[in-house]
Image (tube, helix red, strand yellow):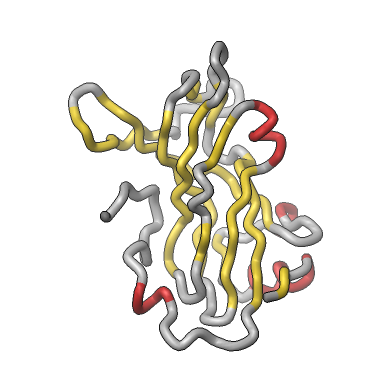
Length: 171
């Protein structure tokens, strides 16, 4: 596998592999991803995580992720990966240095399509909340090209295709 450089990421964006595509988010070998409009949070009323809209929050009035709190979030960007490209999500180092953690479940197989990436986020700070709001640069996607197309793409084998919003576990 080879990591794709900036000019190839621009090609992917223009080809509709990433939507919305903002060229200003391209790094030398990755693409910054932004936090989408909804969280799934815990509630005392249900074991299931419940939707929490972030649309009333921004950088000046963020959602405060409490110390130790776990939420699911999604990227603003949606993906339509071809059958010879995969992606790996990495938390931005700035977010990690603030105390945010991602559960290392950010792999995107070839053929994954029509979906935002669901993120598993936890605040590891002990005393202070961390701000979350739509559009926050939360992480980056590193794209890899395979030697050849896969025989069974995620479009056939996967459970999380065509999910434009944050998703709970499907088992």
